[in-house]
Picture 1 (cartoon, rainbow, N blue to C red):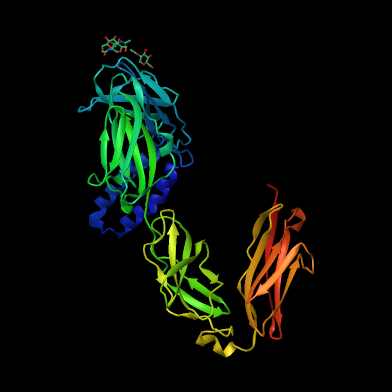
Picture 2: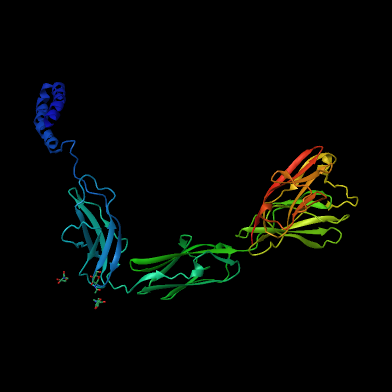
Length: 459
Ligand SMILES: *[C@@H]1O[C@H](CO)[C@@H](O)[C@H](O)[C@H]1NC(C)=O
Ligand SMILES: *[C@@H]1O[C@H](CO)[C@@H](O)[C@H](O)[C@H]1NC(C)=O
Ligand SMILES: *[C@@H]1O[C@H](CO)[C@@H](O)[C@H](O)[C@H]1NC(C)=O
C-alpha cells in the first residue's frame, strides 16, 4: 500500500537527515516535504494483482474479397494475442493514395472479420487498414500491401494451364521450347514470370503477353534453362498463379572407368563405374561391346544392362578381347565410352586363364559366384531360364534346389553347367513352380550358394 511505501522510504530519509550536517538541514526538510509527492504515483499505480488493459496485437492478413466501382469488401484474421481485456470489435479505415486523411468506414465497431466499404468513388486509389479495439485502446493496424483502385473487375484473373503442361516438361538440349498459356481476366491482367524464385533472364527466355495468353519461348534450350517457372496473372488485388517445371536433358557422359576383373574359360567379367554426368536425366542402362584385338571390330554384346558389372560369355578360343561400355539415358547412348586397359586372352587349351593378380589362387580356390541369381517373374506356360556363374578350383560340383529341396532328375527342369555358367531351365512352368531357387557349388575348398525368387504369373 502507499503507506507501506512511505514507511519503507522513511529510513532512507532518516539516513539522509542523519548524514546531513546541521547547515544542510533544510535539504533534509525538502526531502521530507517531497515525501508526500512520492505517494502520488504510488496511489495512481493499480494494485499489482489487477493487470492494466492492453490493446490486442494487430489483426492479420488483410485482403480484398471483392471490388466494384462503388464498394470494396475486405477480410482479415483475428489478432494472435488478445489478452484478458478481450476484443470489442474492429474499425476499418481508408485514405486516398497520396494523402494521409484516414476515413473511418464503420460508425460502430464491427465484430465480424470482413466488411464492405460502400459509397466509394469510382477511379479512386485507396489504402485500407483495419484496427482491433478493446478497453486497452487501438491495436497496431494491419494494412493492405498495395492501394486498391475502385473499379469494376469484369473477370477475375485465372490461368487455364493446358493439361500437357501440368506435368514436368522434358526437352532435349538444342530443342525449341514454345509454351502458350491462356488466361482469363478483364481488365487485361498484368503477367509476370519467375524462374526458381528469380526474375527470368529475358536474354534466354522470351516472354510475350497478349490479353488472353502468355507465350514462353526459348530458341535453343540449354540445360541451365531447367527449373521451376512461376507465372502470375494479376488484376489489381486479384491474382492467379501457376507453376511449370522444365527439364532440359542431353546425352550422358561415358562411364568413368571399366575394368576387366576376371577371365576364365570362354568368359570375361567386367566392372565399371557410373558416369560423372547423367545428362540431367536418370541413367537407364549400359551398352557393352567387345572387340578382338586382331580385327579391332566392335560388336555389341549387351544392351540396357542395369548393373555396373557383367559377365561376357561365348568368347572365342585363341582370341584376345578388349571391351568398352557406353552409358544410356532417355536421350540415348553416351557419345564416348570407357575402354578396358587389360586384355582377356581366351586360351587355346581351354585352361582357366587368370590375370596375374589372381595367379596364386589358380589351383585351389573355394567356389565363388561371380554372377548371382536375380529374382524374376515368368508367365504360366512359357519356359524360363535361371542363370548364374561361378568359379572355383577344382571345378565345383553344381546342385540346384527348389525351396531347399534338391531338384533331382525331374524332367520339368534342365540343368546345364558349362565353363562356370550354370543354368536351370524350367519348362512350361505352372503356378506351383514359383518359389525360392538356389544354385549350390561345392569343391574340396568349400561351398557357396546363390538364391532367387521366381514368381509365375498368369497371363
Ligand atoms: C458493388 O458491390 C456491392 C457489394 O458486393 C453491391 O452491394 C453493389 O450492388 C455493387 N454495385 C454495383 C454497381 O455493381
Ligand atoms: C458502375 O457500374 C455500374 C454497373 O456496372 C454502372 O451502371 C455505372 O455507370 C458505373 N459507374 C461508374 C461511375 O463507372
Ligand atoms: C454517398 O456519398 C455521397 C457524397 O459523398 C453522399 O452525398 C451520400 O449521402 C452518400 N450515400 C450514402 C448512402 O452514404
